[in-house]
Image (cartoon, rainbow, N blue to C red; front, side):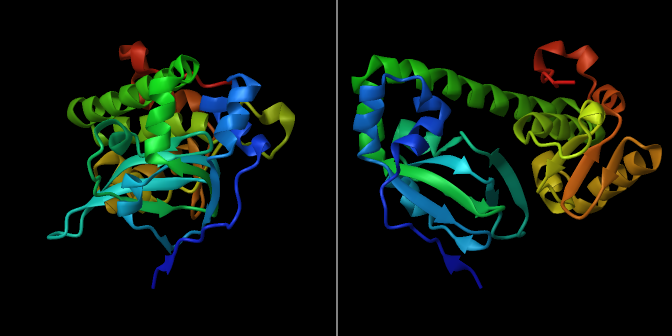
Length: 254
C-alpha cells in the first residue's frame, strides 16, 4: 500500500538552493530572495504522489532519483516519460501551459526536493532576465532529449535504443567506486531494473532481459539486481550506432 509523500516542515537553506544548476550562477542577492520562497521536501521510495500537486508547486530534485511515467488503465502497460536526477526540475509542462498533467511520479530512492509555488516560479521567469537566461538552456536540453527519445523509438531497433539509454544514464549517474586506474573501464548505472528499462525503451521485460544477458555473456556489461556495470564501453557505443548519428552521441568521459 502506498504511503503519502512526506513534507519536511522547514524552509530550504541558501546552500541547498545554490546546489540547483538553474540557480547556482545567479547574483547572490537574487538567490537570497528566491530562497525565502522555497520549501524542502523529502519523498521515499513507494510514497504516493498526487499529480494534482503539479498544478500548485514546481519541484527541483536535490538528491536521489525519480521516474515520471504514464499508464494505460485498460491494459496496465506503462511508459517512462522521463528519469530525473539531482539538478532536474518538474513539471515543465504545467509551468508552460498551466494545464493538468496526468502522470505518475515514482521515487526510485529517497529523494530531497526544493519546491516553490508554481505562480511564483512563473513570476520569476517573467520578471528576472538573468533567471530566464539560466532556465532556457535547461528547457532546451529537455526538449532535445524528448526529440531524441521519439526519433529513437521510430528509427531504431530495441538493441540500439537500449544501448543508447544506458549510455545516456552513465552521464546522468556519475559514480564509480572501484580503483581509480580502472575508472575508464567501468561505468556504473544504478536503479534501472529490467522493468524500468523496458518502459524507457518501449519494449517488454523479457526482450530487455534477453539482450542484457547476451551482453553479459559477451563481457560488455555485468548485471546485478538493480545495477549495471558497463565493462566494454566501445562495444556498447557500437551497438548504439552513434557513428551513424554523431549529433545524438553523448559525451562519455573516459
